[in-house]
Length: 347
Image (cartoon, rainbow, N blue to C red; front, side):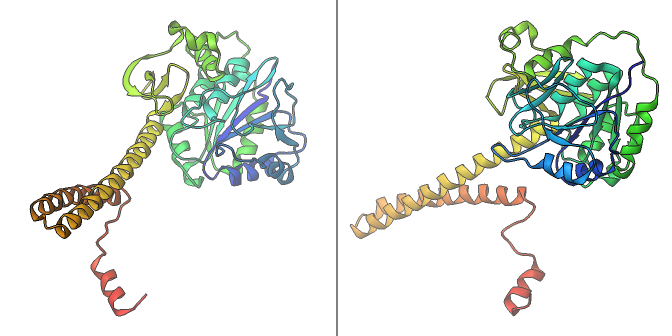
């Protein structure tokens, strides 16, 4: 009878500390293989395997393409690559980003669910937004087990909260209890009945891997067309629904959850507003300069016209500036108490 011997773990903000504590709590004879995906900055260097190997008894390393899965080891997704699991070994691919990340959590979870079904335990730890929710749902669809860190115990609770809200989670436990929970789950009997991989999960797994045949064939695109564009490439997004959890994928495979898409759109709008503010202020400064020149040449009518244009641009700039400041929760106007302290020299 097979055991639950495939552990996939996803974390984001606060994840290094959480993973260090988890690695420290796993025994040297831990019989399963552990796979970890954490968001890394593009172009960054990851020393996470070294940190985890020093923290606990299990060897840890960056996963290598084609590597055979061995029990009692920790495999970490390398920077700028997705880690995908197959029955014949590991795949390290530079597929489309998901939620703006590569490596991403959902592709690893999804691939594990497709390859190993009931043998998989998915674990979602601390992090922002809702990464990991879709992948954990795929683990459950293929009769795996879902474990989530207690949001009250997480440094950043958003990822655990989203998983609990949208997935039929089996265990919600604090970080200190996750290792014991894994050992208990691994001792329980596993359903050996045959299962069929979900077709949509198969398609998405191929998209995550950057499979050209899947990307180029419109029949392979899951979901329905939406009215939104992909922040990564500008292409149209397809809408996918898993119960009340909505996600999006574009033609070439970039994937977004609703929360991640909103966050990225907010960043795009923010950048556009700063560009608009710069253009308006430069426009006003140029009109002011032209007004002074016309004045010096004895052309008051032209100077007045330029001054009016400058005032209009300055008015528009003030509106954009105030919008940018309010988005960050503050205004250029100081609160009364702060203004008093400033004028009296108090700190």
